[in-house]
Image 1: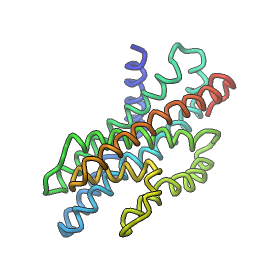
Image 2: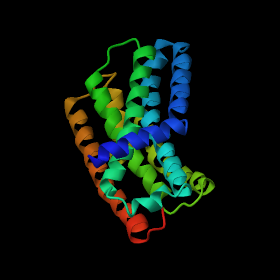
Image 3: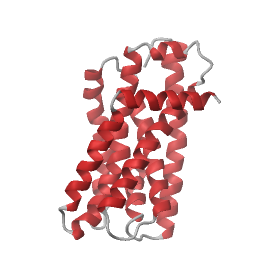
Amino acid sequence: MRILGALKADLNFQLKQGFYAVYAFVTVFYIVVLRFLPDAIVSTAVPLIILSDPSILGFFFIGAIVMLEKTQGILQYLVVTPLRSREYLLSKVISLSILAETAGITVAIFAYKGSVNWFLLCVSILLTSVFFTFYGFVAAAGCHTMNQYFTRMIPYILLIVLPCFSILIPDYNTLFNIFPSVSALKLVYAAFHPISYMEILFCLIFLLSADILMLFIVERIFDNKIVCEGEGV
């Protein structure tokens, strides 16, 4: 299958560019810091840190990948290959989700002493990684240099991450639930602390729907920027 070939190429590309080394360093750093924190703080800090792996790092990495592939001329060659836009995008999502799952589970194993709903944790990391990878692609669209992307990514990431702090406010406004990042945080938190099943179900359905919607949005952006114009993202 074409997507398997693309996935293998993406994994090799990310390995050569040092993405695995960065993930390993950040994960070890998180674990060491959490080891020195009181258990009461760790129980809240672990979900937040695990959320940051597939969100902040995944968001940054997809932008870096797009910029590198653009600089190396890889995106221009995609126009004349049999690889479809959706296959290209899904390959990126899967490869970065593998990194996110590995980092998140490793942090949970070595830094958290309580019980963990491993199935919910894995699903939460996957859905979160998918959303932020697509979101990062939207932010990278139209950028031509890394400096341009770095400047553009700041308002994008603040827009989607700041609403997460709303859950720290007692009786916070449920209007913030329209942000997929809030549902993502609730799902990751639910893997460590019990919340209502209805709330978990709502967050799962909402985040999955957001992922599917983002796929269509990003696919259209990719087709317009690469296939139609043939000039890179």
